[in-house]
Image (cartoon, rainbow, N blue to C red):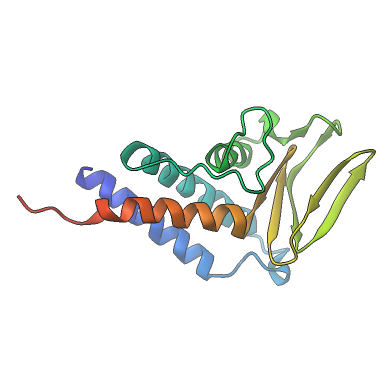
Length: 165
C-alpha cells in the first residue's frame, strides 16, 4: 500500500468515525438538513474502504439481513447499491419494482412498517437499529454500515503502519 492509499484509508476512517460520533441518525434529527449529507458521505467513504479491504486484505461479504436481489449479493454490494442511489438522483436504484413506486431515502427508527402493499412491505425488523430504504433495498445503520465499517477498518489497520526501509 503506497502513502497516498494509506492517507485515503486514514481519512475515510476518521471521517466515518467523526460523522457517527456526531449522532445525527436519531429521531430528534429526523428533519436535520444534513442527515442525507451525512449518510451520503459515510456511504462514499465506506464504499472506498470496502473496495480497499477487498483489494489489499479480504472482502467484507457478510449477508446477514441483506436482501439478496439483483446485483445485491452481500453487504458490500448493498453499500454500492445505496451509494449509487444517493449519488445519482436519476438512478433506477430508487425504483421498487414490486410496488411500482419510487422509494428514496425513507427511514425508520426502530422496528416498524413504512408501507405494505399486498405481500410486499417496506419494514424494519429491529427496535435497536435505523433502517434506510432505497428501491427494494434496506440498509441498517448498525447491522450493515457500522459492522461493515468495523470489519473493513480492522482488515486495513495493518496497512496503516508506516514501514521503514
